[in-house]
Amino acid sequence: MAVKVLVVDDSGFFRRRVSEILSADPEIKVVGTATNGREAIDQALALKPDVITMDYEMPMMDGITAVRNIMQRCPTPVLMFSSLTHEGARVTLDALDAGAVDYLPKNFEDISRNPEKVKAMLCEKVHTIARSNRRFSTFSPPPAAAPASATARPASPASPMPTTRTSTAPAAPTGSSAAPKRKAYRLVAIGTSTGGPVALQRVLTQLPANFPAPILLIQHMPAAFTKAFAERLDKLCRISVKEAEDGDVLRPGLALLAPGGKQMMVDPRGAVRILPGDERLNYKPCVDITFGSAAKSFGDKVLAVVLTGMGADGREGARLLKQGGAQVWAQDEASCVIYGMPMAVVKANLADAVYSLDDIGRHLAEVCV
Image (cartoon, rainbow, N blue to C red; front, side, top):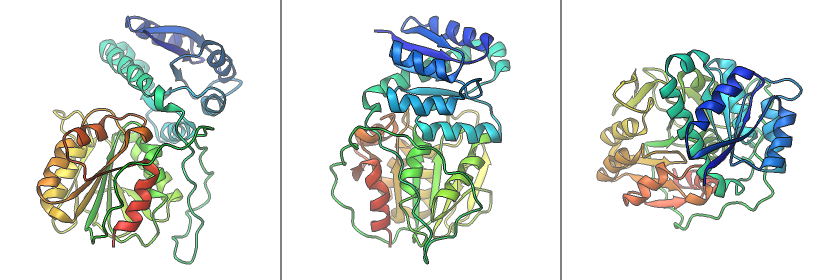
């Protein structure tokens, strides 16, 4: 059965072009279009699409407000179009918190210059997030960051709290693995992709300010987005979060986010190395590369976590970590937006434990000493 798509954009050119690209795929059917957020809500209720593509800046009602309303009234996977700017990153992160599943750059030049590449990428995204639909209503809002206390890091200067995904459905079931044993880890490394921004927020906001281990975060994300994402996490979390720079040193209670378009490695002294993105690699940053360097540098003193995401990035890095005696956790299927990366680790028998998303942060806080 073809994937039913609703295309929402105030630009007639972009609406037509997206519709043409999607309609060329025999397994996708464009069932309707809308020119603003209000129309999008009405069309979503009437047409019940499998996927909605959504612009942000539109008259009458913007895309984020529309996404929030759709999630409340008829939860549907939404693919946002975003500009590759710092402001575009902030808006996209707001949209993901409101309930959007994924995003694509809105670049008219790319559509004209690389139509086949754009077509393949757009259709792949639509098919992928359509498959997330059967789990889509199982999500509950990300937990709010705990208030500052005597032991908490003071909040950053005022910034509006992002809107969060809402659902009336029960929370996803807990993973089946037993509680882990406490250990003095020298590093926690977390890799993720589609669904990762919200997943990382849910995990990291559960950690105390005095979390005893350094953290490396590898999120598949464009270069223009990672700085804004790190800033957002830093405001929400009690630990510190920053975009990693070459020469940064690991320290407890600090999470370093790999910069988009580059690769992040760590040496045995705890110094972070940021390297140019290799065009031969699909992912920049790549979870496998960071996990591999962690395995070489810290052996069995690493705890690695693989969260929601499409593909299998992280599996080979997890294999290297396991060979060195490290621990590897995977997010369970029920709480993933896309059960791809964790599934690859689990199917390769590399996961020491499988936990639901909301249990991962709690267990991290309990296990690291």
